[in-house]
Length: 475
Image (cartoon, rainbow, N blue to C red; front, side):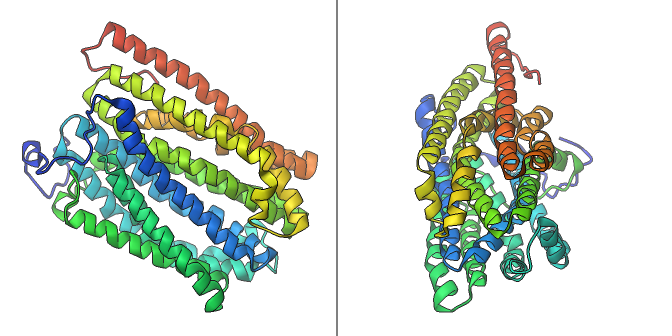
């Protein structure tokens, strides 16, 4: 603890022992069962997020090529906005799970309370900064005169709900970090059902168009945060979110930020990557923008369940690291790796085989379909390696190894992808654009495999030679 930290409480950790049994015991010796109980609800929850995006796109697609292109063009902005929440959430989840593993319940609660206290003002500041800049952003993305007004209609409403979205993201990470992935899952399902019901009402019955899709999303986000407020007020879990537990000391905030920073940068780079994709596609026309948007959305749909599995199981890794139980960490890591690779390879094969019927769900334009089918196939050629990347990043975050996790997580849509997407389309046109994603995916997978082998070797040495000492895995 940092003596200079500004604290609102002086109670000790022993006074923060959970007053009721934790929903899932993170020390359960049956690891595979524990991981699945934690991960499956998280997979379902993030799959619901992916399905939510797909349903929104299907409804908006009925409004025409310009509508789907406009909504697709807002995807990098949404990713950019979510990046802040994911960074805060990942850092907080790692902090919570490690301190729960060390039986430091007060410290875990302080981390959760501080994270939520920081999220609200950050959301308001970001909203105020972006609203006046939307038109410039869309011009930079390559929005045509036909797409611009539709994109603005959609994005403005989404921005007004950003603070609520940010609080939802961080709340979800907190709840999952303490092992209650089921509550997070049911909250996401409730929000999705409400959104799916409101979409056709607002878009078609009330004739709001794309603004209706954004409004439906906003209402569902408000419903979700109400459920999280009820959960924390009850309280529903082992981590207590209280105003009295907010700690604004630099030391604690630094701990949250250092682990979360690579996750934020990864999401920021994801947003930049999508912006560059649309910018590269813009010279080829609205149909190309729509095709890239459809392929990127299908790629995201596949990535979210894998990310969900890692997020759900992360609590087990972090808990084991906090307890310095290296045998448990290795068993957990092997099982997680097996599952993530199986999911990514299966999804990759399914998209390559069924690309045409999948694309037809989003557009009935023959030209868009032809472009989107080839884009989907190339984008998913090496998606089987995404499971390795996701697992390695999660493992390093669980260990609090911020710098090495940045090396792995920033490769796929950062230092490998950005040079490729800037260069290849100039040399090879639209085909170069497609190749940039595939090459970046392959390169990032190779980097993750190298780091994975190194980390597993270090863990085995720690287990074999110094099983009873506190050991930091070399990174």
